Image: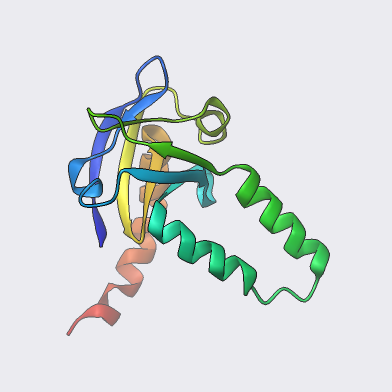
Amino acid sequence: MLIGLYKYSVDPKGRLFIPSRFRKGKNKNFIVTIGLDQCLYIYPFEKWSKLEERLEDLPFKNKSEERAFKRIILSGATEVRSDFQGRILLPSNLRQYAAIKDAVVIIGVSNRIEIWAKDLWEKYTRSAQKLFKKHISSLEI
């Protein structure tokens, strides 16, 4: 399971260090694509395969919408491999989409990693805290 929050910077070449806990075992190859809320999603390669299977089973009634959805998520997807220092190269089009210039926040969200521009993450968490407070009691055991 991918969990946790880490703060890093993207270097001038667009390289980003991926925390070692996210690179354990076979997790050296990743697929990076656009995500919701202006962040990037990074999937370990084996998790991406499962996502591709789910893409084929989406319950779209409108085939035009299905094609549009698949085109957006798949055309933005890029395979990356971490180097010996644990860095990946974020393509410039994806950095631009997520407004990533230097400081980023990397979070584990169960089956994927999310990369956020630090300022966008801070703005997002301010609004998400309200939802968290509203729903946290439903998790109490």
